[in-house]
Amino acid sequence: AQKITQTQPGMFVQEKEAVTLDCTYDTSDPSYGLFWYKQPSSGEMIFLIYQGSYDQQNATEGRYSLNFQKARKSANLVISASQLGDSAMYFCAMREGADTGKLIFGQGTTLQVKP
Amino acid sequence: SAVISQKPSRDICQRGTSLTIQCQVDSQVTMMFWYRQQPGQSLTLIATANQGSEATYESGFVIDKFPISRPNLTFSTLTVSNMSPEDSSIYLCSVRQGEGYTFGSGTRLTVV
Image 1 (cartoon, each protein chain N blue to C red):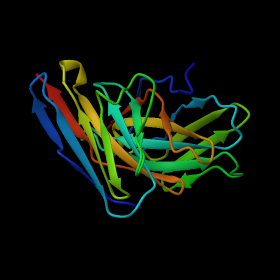
Image 2 (tube, chains in turn purple, cyan):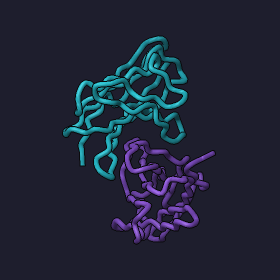
Image 3 (cartoon, rainbow over the protein chains, first blue to last red):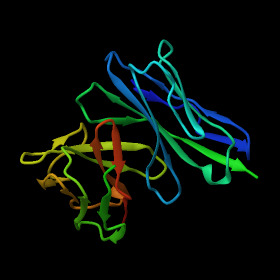
Image 4 (cartoon, rainbow over the protein chains, first blue to last red):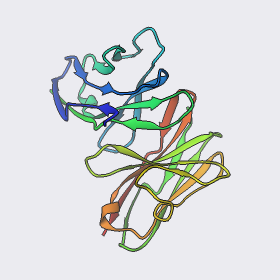
């Protein structure tokens, strides 16, 4: 079974609008971490935001915020005021447990920002 | 966060040959990982590179095909052996520091 699911293969958003990228996860471990990465066409992986399973508040980093709904096992990424440079592939990832280092990635969502 | 230098950035190789990819980190890190990203796909973990011991491979990946070295806490290599066109992918190394993960810039491999 998929541990990280991103159900939106592709998304479009108008420049300056907000967009939400969906991510659901599946784990029975009470300690886990959730990550979002951006991968432009150059191929590099750019860290965007992190949410720990015990964090009480939703994580925010500039224009990025993570809508963490623990009971629903969802960790959606919200990008506010989209910019043309936001066009890229976005990956949700999970680390299970406190000590294991392995990241499991979702299938990714391609975001295109329209001028 | 750590800075990773990954080489080569890209290569075109003949089938049946091998390619060794290097990752150098600017600080000592315990956890180092190697990922494969096939065209249009997500990242899949190949193995965890352990310093001083054999790498831990994920299901579907074997040491004979993807031998890994980790001679110290700042360096690791991944070799893609006896390559076939199906090995054409982006290969990335990654390190964990605290709660964060940093990735190398990737090696874009094309096998012809």
